[in-house]
Every structure is written in C-alpha cells, then in structure tokens.
Length: 369
Ligand SMILES: *[C@@H]1O[C@H](CO)[C@@H](O)[C@H](O)[C@H]1NC(C)=O
Ligand SMILES: *[C@@H]1O[C@H](CO)[C@@H](O)[C@H](O)[C@H]1NC(C)=O
Ligand SMILES: *[C@@H]1O[C@H](CO)[C@@H](O)[C@H](O)[C@H]1NC(C)=O
Ligand SMILES: *[C@@H]1O[C@H](CO)[C@@H](O)[C@H](O)[C@H]1NC(C)=O
Ligand SMILES: *[C@@H]1O[C@H](CO)[C@@H](O)[C@H](O)[C@H]1NC(C)=O
Ligand SMILES: *[C@@H]1O[C@H](CO)[C@@H](O)[C@H](O)[C@H]1NC(C)=O
Ligand SMILES: CC(=O)N[C@H]1CO[C@H](CO)[C@@H](O)[C@@H]1O
Figure (cartoon, protein in one colour):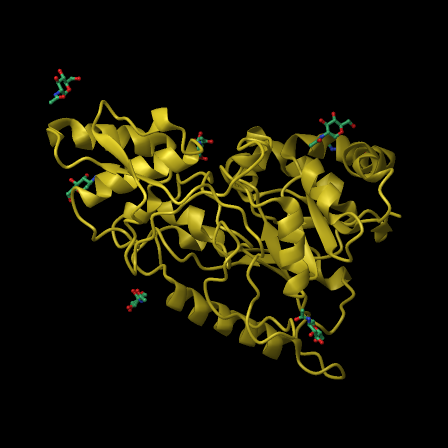
C-alpha cells in the first residue's frame, strides 16, 4: 500500500440506523478538476454517458461543470466548502439559498436540468485539521443527515505498488465486495453505502503532500483513456475512452545532451517544483529511465504545462524541442490537452484535496428543471 493510503480509504458513518436503503449499491465517481489542462466538461459528460456512469460527485459547485451537466440524467452530489458549514447550520432557508446562489442560478436559462441528489458536507482535511473548530457546525448542519458515503480507490502511479494491474485487482475486489454486501433484494445483508470511486480522471495539480500517487487516482488518464478494465455494472464490456480529445502538437521538450549538463539537475528540480514529476518518484512508471532521461521528463512536463510555449523549453539553453516521442512502454512523456484557456477553472477551489465524509440531504431530493 502506498504510504498514507489508509488516509484515503476513509470511512465515516453517521446515524446509520435512521437510514432507509435501497438494495442496490450505488457506485459513482469523484469528478475532480485539479488539472492544469482539464478535459472539457462537455467531453467528460460524454465520457460519463458512454460508460453509463450515472452518479458523480463534485467538490464544489463549479459553474462550467454544472453547465455541461445540464440536461443530463447524471445524479449529482455537490460538495459544500467548509466555510459554508456555519451558515448551513443556521437554517434550512440558508441552505436553500446557498443552493440557489451556487447551483440553480447557473442552470437557469438552460433547457435541461441537473438532478442533484445530495449536498455533501465536510472533507477529509477538514476532519483531520479542523475537526474541533467545525465539528459543532457539522453536527448542526447534519441534523438532516440521511446517509453515509464511502470513498475508495487505488492509484496507478507515483508509488511502488501503484499501477494499473494492482488498481484493477483492488477495484474488482471492491466491486465484488459491494455486490455481495448488498445481498439479494429480498434479503439485503448489510445496508449498502453509497460508494464513490476516487476518481474519474487523473489530476496533475492535486496536492501531493500525502504522496506523489495523489495525482494518479483516475480510472481514466488525464485525457480520458481507460487505464484498466472495470465493471461496475455499467452494462458495457470495456470502458469507453473520451472521444475527439484535442491535443497540443506532437512535440516534446528534452535535454540537449551536447551541452554542459552540470547544472541540468538543478533546472529539472526547478521545473518539477511547478510541473508534475510524480511519475519519477521511487517505484513510479518513469523511475527507471535514469539520468539524464529524468531531466528530459521534467523539462517536458514543464513545457506541456506551459502549453508548449517555446520560451518554456529553454532552461538556460539546456533544452531543445523534438518531434520524436521520448516515451517508452512504461514511461509516457505526455502531450497535454489543448484547452481554450489552460487555467480556465478556478484554481483556488481546485487545490483542495477533499474527501467526502457525510451527506447533508436537503430534506428531500432536489430536482431542478
Ligand atoms: C447550530 O444550529 C443550532 C440550531 O439553530 C444552534 O443551537 C447551534 O448553536 C448552532 N451551532 C453552532 C456551532 O453555531
Ligand atoms: C504492479 O505492482 C505489482 C506490485 O508491486 C508488481 O508485482 C507488478 O509487477 C506491477 N505490474 C506492472 C505492470 O508494473
Ligand atoms: C498541501 O497540503 C498541505 C497539508 O494539508 C498544506 O500544508 C499545503 O499548503 C498544501 N499545498 C498547497 C499548494 O495547497
Ligand atoms: C448502458 O447500460 C444498458 C443497460 O445495462 C445497456 O443496454 C447499454 O448498452 C449501455 N450503454 C452503453 C453505451 O454501454
Ligand atoms: C551553473 O550555475 C551557476 C550558478 O547559477 C553558474 O554560475 C554557472 O556558470 C553554471 N554553469 C554552467 C555550465 O552553465
Ligand atoms: C534523476 O536521476 C538522478 C540519478 O538517479 C537523480 O540524482 C536525480 O535526482 C533525478 N532527477 C529528477 C528530477 O528526478
Ligand atoms: C462556492 C460558492 O460559490 N459559494 C458561494 C455560494 O453563495 C454565497 C452567497 O449565498 C456566496 O457568498 C458564496 O461565495
């Protein structure tokens, strides 16, 4: 198990006895957007539809994502930012107006609706660091808590035993377990919890203070390609990849071996401080490309993150742009997604690594039309 993974396999139960249960275990996906070049929300919605994914959870009411979901039948759980808890505790009216201000107003004028099932309260860092401060508010806010949620997953890179085959094995075991746990409709064994798979897509801007694997939780890569086989009851044999993804040009930034390389490592470290070098971590997919291949990896990551701008492939003259893909079978040198604005999603929300801990049910299923 990658270090600290237990932090993530986090279970939080509340008031289970008060719950009413359906007999079907619901499996959904966390849809995070902490990526430098997020796949367009419309492509992600297509990806959800083509894989029969019917439930997703968002960390916050991101307007672009809500617009893309408008008109789909996807059931949505939306996170409430921690500072809102106090307000939510104050009254149901306050909760309703929060939903109006942050959710419905983005949808008005649209032809479709988004089906919002739950508003999620609380996240993991919150529970660990601010538990004392916010706990009283949560307890107040969740007077209406009606369910419990499990968040679970396995990363595929950034640590020694994090790869597609270990993830596939884990996920298959998880889904088998959930299936057996739900029993038959007439004889349910244990109340099935809602389970959200962490996560839909890789996110190259997630906080890695708990480990480099944090950026590799996706069942799909950052560009929407399935990493392994997963049957969560979606009715298709294989997962369907995102279609018509638009990439930047097939160009990479690599180290120029003809230069004096004595300062190369320092430049690489600098690149890695902002770019994503988690694939170079011990045991990760690019950990054995050695020196100076790892310098090229760092340079390229920085170059892609900067939308292949020529000046981002300089490093005091140590770098050059190539059209020859430096990837090998294990280690992929990515080409980033073309985005209209590479920073289009609000980064201040995105850096929050959040895990859902409890659910605040706004007294009934809210169905916006
Ligand atoms: C939460 O709301 C309840 C009911 O209005 C109130 O009694 C309680 O003091 C509130 N909790 C906090 C921490 O403000
Ligand atoms: C994945 O990790 C496991 C456990 O460390 C290892 O046995 C296996 O060879 C790895 N598979 C691949 C494809 O790297
Ligand atoms: C990452 O998380 C750690 C621990 O929660 C925090 O101290 C740090 O400020 C975070 N970094 C960023 C860039 O948000
Ligand atoms: C979605 O699931 C249904 C019912 O299981 C199945 O008939 C359909 O082919 C699936 N759709 C896709 C695109 O896989
Ligand atoms: C390496 O960096 C140092 C400090 O920035 C600089 O003085 C030196 O000239 C550099 N060496 C080369 C070969 O570029
Ligand atoms: C590249 O590999 C060398 C040798 O293993 C190591 O000293 C260096 O820290 C690595 N650099 C990066 C950016 O991973
Ligand atoms: C996350 C978010 O958008 N929060 C907004 C929700 O609406 C209130 C007003 O009711 C704003 O103050 C928040 O910023």
